Image (cartoon, rainbow, N blue to C red):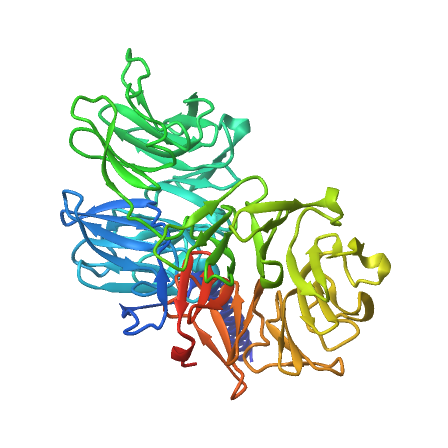
Length: 632
C-alpha cells in the first residue's frame, strides 16, 4: 500500500511537472511568435509589361553607395547606376522595374546565406531588396508595420538590423525577423550605428538610445542632447556623434560630453581625415576638426545654394563625397569649395507628392502638389510653368470652368482663380465671404460654385457668397468632398453625409441611422443612377436614389479612399487608396479590380482624363494610361 501511494504521488507530481513544463513551453512559443514576423524571400521579377507610362518627376537623390566600382544613387524615383566617372549607365524605376515604393535606405552588405556582398535596398513599404549586379531578391515581411522601414544596418555577424517607424529595431538572421530586444520595440527609428551588442539608435521623438552590455540608456534634452529628434549618427573609436536639428551631441565612452555646431540643422554626419563632416539643411557642409589644437573650418568657397539639403557624406580619396537632393559633389583639388560630379536628370514636373490633377479646355495639364504649389504643363513642347506662393501652396482640388474661361484652385489658404492666360487673377478667402480660408473641395452647383471647407460650405454665385454649417442642418462642419447631380448636392464630411436640394438639407446619413459603415466621407462620384461614396476606413459604398446604402464586393473593405481621389469616365470609375493601389470599377460588367503593378506608389491621390489618357497621381509621382489598355 505504501509503495502504491508513493507511486501514485510520484505520478501526480510527474503530471504536474509535465503540465508546468508544457505551459512554460507554450508561453515561450507564444512570446516568440509575438516577437517574430513572418516573411517571404524570393527572386524579384519585375512586371513584364505595364500599361502605365511615367510622366517624369524629379529624381531626388537620397542615398549613395559604391558597389563593384560603380556608383548607385537611390531615392523616391528608384535606383540609378553610374560608372566610376559619374557617367549614367541604367536606372531601375520604382513601379515599373522595382516595387512601387520610394527607396528609403541603401547600403552594401552580406546577408545570411550569401557568399558575396550585395547592394541592399530598403523600400518605404515593400520590404528589402538585395541586388547582386544582375538581379534582385526581395525580403517581404507580411506585417505592414514591419515593412515600414526607415534605415538598415548590416552587422559584422552577418545579420541585418532593420529600423522601422512603429516596430523599433528588428534583426534578420537568415531564418527569422524578430525584435532585437523588447526595450528597442515600438520606436520610430531614424538612424542606426554600431553592432548588435553595442548599438546607437536615433529616434524621431525619443532622443538617442544606447544599447550595450544587455542594457539600454536613453539620452534626450535632459541629458544634454540639443533636440530629441535624431537625424544622423556617426561613430569614431570611443566617440559617438549624434546629429539633431539643433546641433551635434558628442558622446565619449557612452557618456555625453559636449555639443558641437550649435544651432545647425544637421542632416548627415561623417568622420574622415581627423574631422567630423556635418551635412546641414541650409548651411552646406561644416568641417569640425577632431584633433586637439585645430580650429573649426569650412571650405572658404562653398556655395550654400549648391549644397542645400545635404543628405549623405561618404568617404573618397581627396575628400568626402557630398550627396544633395539634386546632385553629387566632391572636394576641389585645392581644398577650396566643391565641384559637382553629377546632377539629377531633367524632369517635366517640379515635385513628386501630387494632390490634385486637371486638364483644361486647351489641353494643359494642371498638377497640384501637397506642399509645392502647382505646375501647368502645356499640351505642346513648351516647358511647364511652376507657380508657388503663400496662397498657391497646398493644393486640394483643381476645377477647370470652361463657361467662365477660368480654372479654380482650392488650396489650404484660399480659393485661387486663374484666368485664360493661366495667371492668378483673384484670391478668395474669409475676407471675401468664404466661411473659411482653407478650401478642401469645389464643385459647380446651379449657377455658381459650392465651396467645401473645414467650417462648412459656401455658395458663391452672381448674388454673392452665403454659407451654411451644422446650425442649418449640415451633418458636420468639416467638409471633405462634394458631389453634384442636377439640383442635388451631396456633402461628405467627417461625421457623415448630407443630401441637399437647392441649398436645403433634405437628409443626413450616418453610421448610426443608415447602412453607411463609416462616417468619414472622403470622395463622392455619380455613376449612372446612383452615387459611389468613398470613405476613410471602409472603402467605397453605393447609395441609390431611395437613400439605401449597399456594399460592393472587393471595394467595400477596410481600406482608406484618399480625399477627392475619384474619377468617373465613360467606361470606368477610378478610386485612389491610401496604401492599396488603384481600384477600378468596370461600368459595363459592374466588376471591381485592383491595379498596383506599374504605379510608383500604392498611395494613389488624384486623377484626371484628357489627351487620350487617364492620369494617375500618387505621393511618389505621376503616371498615365490609355483607358483602352486597362485590363482589370
